[in-house]
Length: 347
Ligand code: SAH
Image 1 (cartoon, rainbow, N blue to C red):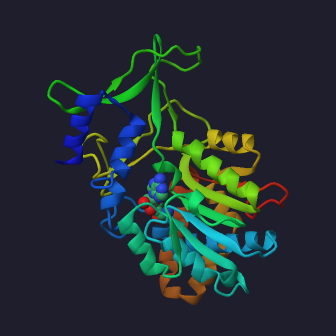
Image 2: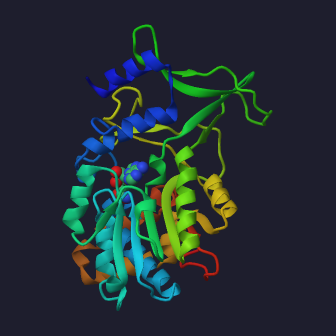
Image 3: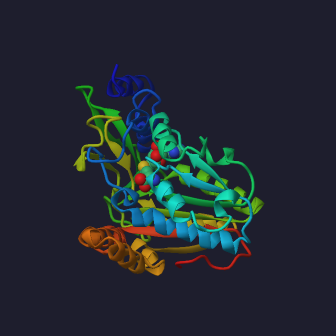
């Protein structure tokens, strides 16, 4: 039975699913989920191209950022943690870029938080010295530097739609022909709001547990957690659920498990929850601002001088990472920090 057939049966027996349950099935089902069945997220056949896959400069600069923050922590033995490392390219570039930072690699225990078996294999091929955890809370205790690129957007969201008579939760059900279809719950008793009818609000329950795990870690021992993702700082009332297959937007209900499902990250809420939890919060700023602040222009110049034959490609990559019309403005960077530390680099 395909995942789609199993979902139809599940809905027949138990009623409609929330969008967040639907996303969780599509992404994490151990047999047919997107991450369980995609051995190679990157390369030409990828459904999407992430920043580290687009340019080595991305991982290199994040590696140097970590070196700076390791220094700010007083150069302790530390967990160098990545959430959702994909093919492991980012950390491979970060590791190479910090080879000459004296003592850093000896002090680092590399911990990759990844639930996909095929992707763990890809990561192991690039980072044979790493260890793996399924959840952040399973990573060893101690000082931590944590990075996560395009991880928050995988966290399933619930969606609420403003109607004339109140808020309705968006649900995934089936129609008479037993086809998956979106529907709405009956109206929820909810306070009045300024939102126009048709406005959609999204809530990611997994974000709350993630912040809790980060907060526990950063209060128990000093550290920083850097998140990069696409998202907004002001909710616009839009439905941001999207399904990507081979670089194309597809219907999220068409082929469950075969497309990557994501939602934009609500950075205002993320920052609010982290502050409430007693962490220091820097940003969100745009990816363009952050990378320029870390000196991507100098890095690109240096690489181009050493490899003049690649100068054009490097200029294209830098544009892709930093320009407002490419990844520079839609992607945001936010840093959560233990209290009593100086501000991190780049903010
Ligand atoms: N950071 C990589 C890949 C982003 S894709 C890059 O920038 O190229 C998202 C990654 O997060 C994948 O490795 C996926 O398997 C992992 N992932 C998604 N949800 C997860 C979860 N709940 N727990 C652990 N890993 C998860």
